[in-house]
Image (cartoon, rainbow, N blue to C red; front, side, top):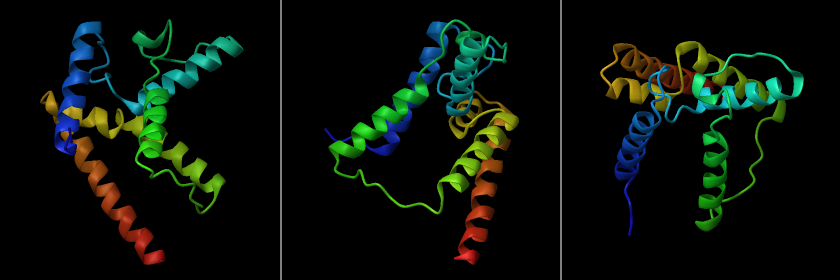
Length: 151
């Protein structure tokens, strides 16, 4: 059975909302599948456990962090291997990639979440979610133009 990207997106979106309702994840709204927030909570939980600090986390992650990011990475790896699409590619530089990834994650947290969370917030009728999606789209367009002019 072949599933389209639209069907996959609808299933993922409804699943995220369903998980929020079942586990009563509130606040923050639209936390069911937020890559930026779950990564922050996972890192903060590890640092808090090892160093005895009290870095901030969402209430749902205080006892044990949500492992969404780990599941996404493992799922993407399995999908790439199964579909024979897994290739190690040379990038521009590991340090540059790490710094850019770090900045993207932090800016996502500053604006209130990742694109998935912005989509969920928009689906709930939140105007800031829509503004976040539009901001992400504008950022992608501008950065792509800048990158293509350098190449």
